[in-house]
Structure formats: C-alpha cells, structure tokens
Amino acid sequence: MLARFLCCALSLLSLGISLGSSLVIADDGSDKPGLSMAVAAQKLIDVLPADQKQKLMYKYDDPERVNWHFIPKDRNGIVLWDLNGEPKKVAEDLVKVGLSAAGHAKVLQVRSLEEVLYLFEAGEEDYRRNRRHPHKYHITIFGTPGPTGLWGWRFEGHHLSLNFSVQDGVVVSSTPEMFGANPALIDAGPGRQLRILSGREDIARQILKACNDEQKKKMWISETAPDDIRGAGAPQAVVEAAVGLSYSEMSPDQQKMLRDLLGEYLSAMPVQVVRDRMKAIDKSGMDNIRMAWWGESEVNKRHHYVIQGATFIVEYNNTQNEANHVHAIWRNVGGDFNLPVAK
Image (cartoon, rainbow, N blue to C red):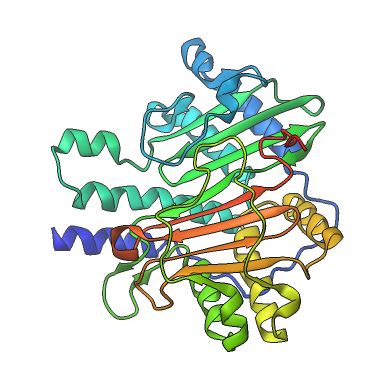
C-alpha cells in the first residue's frame, strides 16, 4: 500500500506547476474564452449519441443550472467516465478552454486526488471506486452554445464546481468557482510534497503573521474556526457585513501580499474573466476590502478566512481531516449564475 501511495504521489507531483507571486494580465484583446467555449461545447454536442446528448443538455433557465455542490454525490449531466475516444477528448477540451493553463493544471490535480482517497478510504472496493474516481466529473450545458445569445455550462465533481454563463460570446458570469483539496498535503519525503492550493493558505497566514497587535485585534476574529465555508450549494453567496482588517489599514507589505493572495484565486480563470473581475474591484476600490481570520494561526491547525470586497467574497476553510482538507471559493456579491441579487 505504501508503495502504491508513493507512486501515486509522485505521479501527482509530475503535474505540478509554478506560479509567480504577481499576476500579469496581457491587455491585448486576444482572449475570447466565451467564443472558444461555444465552439468546444458545440463540438461536444455534435460527437455525442442521442442518449448522452439528452443527459448533457438543459434549457438555460432550468433550475438544474443552480443545482451545484462540491461534495461526492450523483449528478446530472454527462459524466466523463462514460466517454471514450473522441467524445472524451472533446469533453476534456471544453474544460481546458474554460480555464487558464494554471487553472486547468489545478483541475487535473484536484481530480487526481480522488485516486489517493480511493486507495486510503475504508469500505468495499466497488463502493470506493464508484465514489472516488478522477473521471467522476460531470459536464452540463444550459441553452444553445453559439457566438450570439445566452447559454451556460458547468463542470463539477468532488471538490470542483466551475459555472459559466456566456452572452454574445462574452463570459458574463464565472461563479460560483470552487476548488478543494483532500488531502491538502501529500508528503512523499523530503522535496517530494504536493500542496495543490498551498498559496491560498501560505500567503493568508503570512498576512496574519505580519499583523501588529492592533491589526491582529481587527483581523483575528476568533480562535475557533467554523466547520466549513458558508452557502455551499446555495444559489447565492451568504453576504454579511464585512469584518476584519481593511486593505487601507494594512502595511505596504501586507497590501502586496493581499494582492498576491487574490492573484492565487484569479489565476485559475481566463484573461477576460480576470480582467473583468479586476476592473470591478478597481472601480469599487481596494481600500475597503477586508480580510478576517478564524481558528489557529499555525500550520496543520484548524483555520478559516474570508476576504470580502464590494463585488466579491473569497472564503477558505481548512478544518477537516486534521486541517488537511481545503475548501476555497470565489463568489460574486452581485449575484452568481448571472442572476442579480435582489436589493
């Protein structure tokens, strides 16, 4: 079993990527993910037989579109393990065009962790194999993909939920965007560690550690961490009054770290999506973005944080599996799923 674990861990490490601390957006107008998504989605529709096509497609306004979650469960849509050959490749291509290179690599890593859970969880093998599999991820298309009109799609499974709405070739909604990791750390020996979402934890902790006493009183809300992120499976984010330390109250070093931390989340998305999110943040102003921490401050201890601005909420939780199980999400304060929140 140990040999199988080490082999699995090393194969996961081969998928690793290195992200710089600064996010650079090339404003050349060449990135049009909505059009690429439409082409890839239509190609998937075209290569599927009628019975699978029926599972894949829903009307845009079907309630299924907001029926999201990241737990291991049965889902609607077409599941990757039912596809082979060209249909499988085309389905994977749709996922790829919906993300940046860094985001796609993270998706592959998250999926690969299902093999680790399959090897180590208790239970009958058939049960574990059905519950934990790198191809037990579903694609669902809502509406008719094309260069004009409104349509959407979802890629989802354990610890992944990626939801897009596209209007006239432009991505108009990309939330909820959820990535998780269990185990958050795979340790195969010195220099052979895999932490898929490490930046989202490490930079946040660095901001907390850099707080002086007065800053810490504002940022560190409680030594008890909540058990999970809020609003999991809900169509809209839980939006409460922002608490914590504001960007304007941070030192220049902390401000840079907070920008880098946001970059860790933004880097999964295509350029157009990142650019639109950043424009919204810039318009509302960085100064009122607040960051709050719950739980303990040390590594391998239960912790949780929220970063909240006028247009977005980032929420991160690492409390399960002895603080080795991460849930991290980006949500739109104005409304997920291209559905504006009622004022």
